[in-house]
Image (cartoon, rainbow, N blue to C red):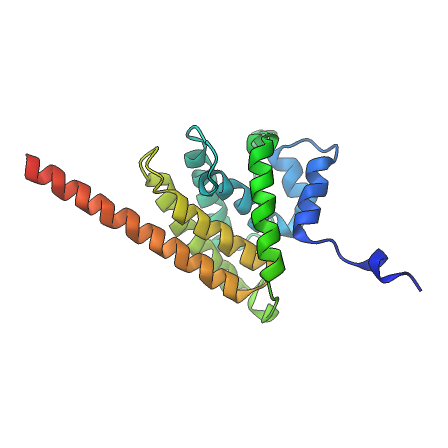
Length: 205
């Protein structure tokens, strides 16, 4: 009989850490090929992490939010694996070159891993659940994309999508609901502050 630790499945953080330490190129195509069916949610974690985590993005967060919207559309369309144009497959995941970013991202994943309680697995991986997941991704990512640069208003919507994606990976509805709540709060704050700014400008005219 093989010892228990030899057959123990690697955790998500361990899989990502192993990929980062490996010899694979840090490209979008290499990422998708390596993580297969997990690549939708895990790629969303990486993309939205750029805007959600407290690290400088230099405008990259808006590009990542746009890519996340495209992933959400693919989920709604029923794709089982991420589709990328050949030119995009060769693009580097530049954020993963930065040690501060990867350390913060892995730290967040590990914290949620310790709290995750996989349950109601039958809710995940279904056509309807993928559509709901896609709608949540599009809503939060679109809000992050339209947020004015350097305001920080993209943080909560991005963090919401990131946590929803981790909840899907961990098959934990509680984490999914928490992420959805954070995203909704972020969208509401962005909308309210935008309305206040428009009203203030209107009174000055």
